Structures are given as C-alpha cells and as structure tokens.
Image (cartoon, rainbow over all chains, first blue to last red; front, side, top):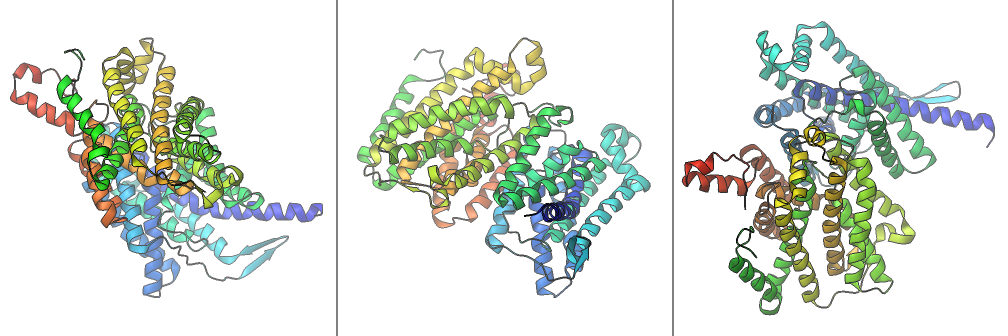
Length: 292
Length: 320
C-alpha cells in the first residue's frame, strides 16, 4: 500500500466515524438532559433507543412510510412511553438514594429489553437503503450517511435552541440548577421532570431511528448503547451539551477506526476503555457522590 | 453457637441436616431444584457483600461467574479434579478482583454500576476472542458429571459458608466499616477508615464466592461458552434476589434466593423468555414498594407489634 492510498483510507474511516457521531450526539443529548433535570442516570437509555429503532422499523415497513417520517412517529410514541415511565415509576424515586433509582432503571431496562425480545425475537432489523454516493476529492460520501449526520446535528442544535431561547427551556434549566428554588419561583417541577424525561426518550428514539438507516440492530442493542452513551457524556463532562457533541465525535471515530483496523467486537472494548480512562484521569466529572 | 449469635442452634442444625440429606433421600428432580437454589443463595450472598454492604451497585458481578467457570473448565479438560479446578478459579477471581477493584472502585455511584456492566461485556468479548484457550464461541465440552451428590455438597458448603460468613461479618468491625462506607463514604474516610482497602476486600470476597459457584456449575452443566459463562439473566437474578430479601442484611439474600429461586425454576421451565420480563416487573415493584427488602420490612412489622421502644431503635436495625 502506498502512502497516499493509506492516508486516503484513514481519512475515509475518520469521516465515516464523524458522520456516525452525529447520531450518537443526539442520543447523548437525551441522556444529558435527563441527568441534568432529574439527577437520575438513565441506564435504560439504550433500551429506549432500541424501542425507537424498532418502532420506526415497524412503522416504516407496515405503513410504507419514509424512514424519516417513521423517525418522527417513533419520537412521538417514545415521548409518550417516556412520559408514562417518568410519571408512574421514576417520579416516585426522585430524591431517593442513587441505589434506588439505579435499581429501578435497571429493572425498566430488563423489562424493555426482554419484552422486546419476546415480541420481535433476536433478529436484526435495518432500514438501510441504497443511496447516491458523492465523491469529494479522495472521499466517497454516501448520501444517507450525510443526511443522517445532518439530521443528528440539526436536532441536537434544535434542542440547544429550545433550552437556551424558550421559556420551556428556561424552566428545564432552572429545575436542573436548583430544584427547590425553581419550585419556589412557581415552576411546576413535577411537570418539568416529566417533560424532560419524555424529551430524553424522544431524542433516544430519534437517534435509534436514524441509526437503523446505517446499521442493523436487534432488541439487545441497549446493552452496548448504554455504555456508549455514558462514555460520550463523561468525555464531555456531564451536563455539557457541547462537550457531549465532542465526545460523540471521539467515540464515533474511535469505534470506526477499531472496527476498520481490528474487529467490530474490539470496537466495544475501545469504547469501554475510553469510558474507564476518562473517569479515572478526570474524576472531577464523576456524577456519583453518595452511592447508597 | 452462643446465645448472642444470630443463629438459634437447633433450627439451624435441623435445616442443615435436612439439606445434607436431600440428595440421598429425595428424588432427582427435588435434588436438582435444591441444587439450583443453593447456587442462587451463593450468588445472592456474593452480590450482597459488595453491593448490599458497601452500596456499590454492581450490574456485572457475573463476570466472576465466568472466570470461575472457565478456569474450572480449562483445568478439568487438562485432567485436573473439578473441585480443585473450581477452587483455583476462586483464587484467580479473587486476585483479579483486587486488581480490577483498584480501577473500578474508583468509580462512584452510577458510573460504577455502568462500568461493571461494561466489564462483564468485556469479559465475554475476551472469552470469545481467546480461541486457543477458551475455544471461542464453540465452547468447551466436559465429560458429563455422573453423580449429582458431589456437586450438590460443594454448592451446599459454599452457600452455608456464605450465610455464616455474612452473619459473622454483619456484627464485625469489618462489616460495620463496610456499612459506614455505604452510608457516607467521605465521613467514613474522615473517621480514619481506609475505605479503598475495605471496598477492595469486599469486592474480592464477592468475586471468590461467585467464581466458586461458576466453577461448580460449569462442571455440573459440563459445558461452557461465552454466553453460558456470562449470562445477563444471572446478573439480574442475583441482584433481584438480594434486593427482594433485603440488601445489606444477613437473612435477606437467603429469603430472596429461596422464594424467587423456586419461581425462577418454575417459570424458566415453562416460559424461558418471559421469566426475565416477569423478574424485571418484580424488581420494579420491590424497588417502588419495599426498597428495603422483605426481611427488614417484616421484622419492622413484627417489632411494631411488640414493645414501642424497640420500634424507636430505627428502621434499619439488626435484622437477625
């Protein structure tokens, strides 16, 4: 292999990683939002992503809708699921020790994952379709990857706009900063928590729906994606949306590089190692506090 | 046993005598069922030790089940006695836990839980990749174990040791220090407790117990592959059993493992997939309605009916 060919291949892999990173950024934004407002680490986040992906798949296939419309349907459905999960389950453990909310969301995760396995079985599904490939210099960019990236990025930016510029966003941020003070200012924090969780699961659903336009997934995908989500969030520092965006790009690239130069299985190992290394050498971002 | 110990001698002795007699007098089905329950008891106590006592919730202790299982399988395949192989597996898991604990136990709260989740996946990936040692996804086949009795007795000893060990721990300085870490790690540290050392010891003992169960079960099943060595289902099982009975209590895991264990065996036979969903729902209900577990809730109820002053002693109270 000559030198220019080698560097072109490397560049291609990196670009592909960045493009996938757009989807990850969207998912991580949901995780960040839920932790920020509810102070709960949503370890079922990967399973909500999975439900979003499966819903989009079913809707697109059964009703013959475009994958992009199916994504919006999945977002709406999962926002409902999220609102109910928050209202009837998570809300009841707000303010309890971390121990309790962790176990609760672990239980939610197990119910969703194994329930989905019952309904859909362990088969992989995908909405990937052939698309035009654009050639830009030494790079070839498939249209669907670029569109998916743009959507991931656009939706993440839309969320930022929502949080920064609207009254709704202000109430979310106020609750995230200080729950009691927000309540004293007349914000209905219970409703805000429900909205935040619903928005978080809707973001997860959209990223899941975008993901199956690139890859195939099965009901067990949450197992891997929860770790990926947290790895991204800790790289950027918990609660930082711009940080999470950087984290998503880093994870996307690290993953595609490992898959390309080694194996796909090793890509998950890389993600895990990044997660550990960041937490150990930058423990200032650790969310834990008391573990009970 | 002295009167001050958590055991009443006669009921305990009778229970042990019955358990020892089971494989010799009961039917094969009952023996196999009891054997599974003994495994659940050992696993629930193993999980309880790190997560119940120190409050570090691990969703990946099953990693050590696989370490024990693989060690036993590889050594047994090479001609070693399975019991010796299992014991070596326990030692390896214990040492491994010390090294891993240095890293993992620096993570707090949710990060530890998620990190352990990842660690179990990492172990499964490594087991699949090390084809020369583990035979990859094909797995290792062992000669079928001809008699249930030795396996049963091995698990019975392990389960008994775990119960008695926890009872002793609960009243020891060591146990009190673990609980201090659970209640407030910083405060414990400022009182001069070397929290890292205590956490690592608890993590390591937990790993040994779970790995021993893994080794014996692998010999019993006569087969191991990455899926059977690191089953996510077993992870859920040990968590739910300890939490159902009462995490951080002496008798909680026993109550949880024996009641839910029977349900697991019945459901598993008839609805192999559905039982994990049902387990998830049970865990949800426990966390929402009796987060302290059955044993503390029951003893609280009993105490409330007794003298009012005992109630005032507090909700956690000595369970035994």
